Length: 210
Ligand code: URA
Image (spheres, rainbow, N blue to C red):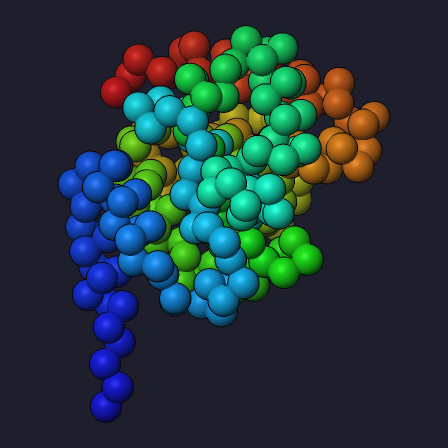
């Protein structure tokens, strides 16, 4: 029988009592749970404020994120920061930003289901420790992996409308366009700006409910 040495490490990470302890344990683990570990420079856990009441969830780190070890620091992240700021949201102060998976897929392809299966327990732990009142799902991949049942609805129907889900009691959820999509199709920018106004309203209404 082969022993999976990572399992006890993994349990240790998932038993962390504070967000900082979780983060330190995950980085120190040098996680090898999926093949993406082979090509990565950093495990990208987040960016922003780990005390914030709002969590934004993207897809996966890209090249800049992998280099710097922080989420959404490339072109898409800069566009998101700028658009959020225009809506009155400072991403580094008012939100914590994470991704469905924590290591960069080659050529920035979408995460494979088996990679998501290995990585998602870590995001769930982040959610448990952060205890957010608002979660913004950035793009179709985030929607697909966070909310079972919703993908059939599709982005076009789901985007911009707040909803609740039994998996996240007490949390207001909202699906937003992924900023990389806006980079590819800037005509959607005004629509995203409208959705960010709704997000800001949710943040204002729910951020002190913890
Ligand atoms: N795109 C994502 O989904 N996440 C990042 O961190 C950067 C780009």
